[in-house]
Length: 345
Image 1: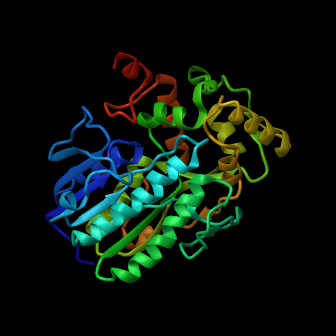
Image 2: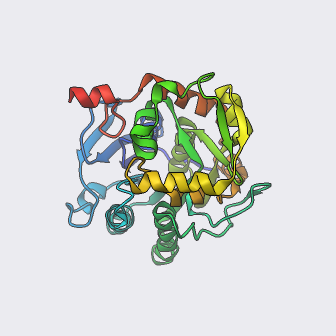
């Protein structure tokens, strides 16, 4: 399969968990001539050969077409996880802002669009066998994140029909972890109730063993290598991305040197819902419902067509994340800044 060279790439959402890894992977690749990272705020971090642009993709923001003109590939990663109590705000960025990116890429004559979809776009599916990319992508209707990811899948279905000359790729990774994302992900999903210093091996007595609590994960840098190959290779369509093994209560308990504790689902869900309503945790109970229903994914297509193989297991990715959580790790970008960096700012 012939690969492209001398590529000019724009990455939206370039300063977050996935964006920083994708920008680094692209900047290290000799097939890539230039990388322009787009984010709301310019970071202090800057890999060699990478430029930055402070642009908001939301409706009413500045024109995107001038920044995409002459570009070979747009990698669209920009996403807003909060506020979970205001789905109109996240819809505005995640759906309407994404559509602005898609349409600007087409108007500018960009050759390829690589879009960050997710396992969250999938309809509920099996936990005892992996599904391929043909599994329905209707999401879980209760969770805003899943609704938005699934809606964009439908948008891209029509978009590909209208812009058949453009190469469109949809990346569907599992849960993504790295050390530097720990502070951001704690803020997004757990909030102040999660005692970061205590989430470490031997200090957690038990892990709730809940029906349906089996999911997939991978290291963000491993996902970034798949994005890099999707940029450089003439591939189209969707790619599942996940590392082995699937994570369940037994595996998580092993990581934390704890024991799995079988628990009924309703009281756990009720406690999470109450904490969310009181704004004690930012992650909604609807997202929790979705996680329990997500299918396991088969990543064979990525392995075959992208020559992709994760370098770390899912367990290693989670262990690195937990280490970062304890250390309050981060990076010199606004989304990934640690608590100490935010206080200093």
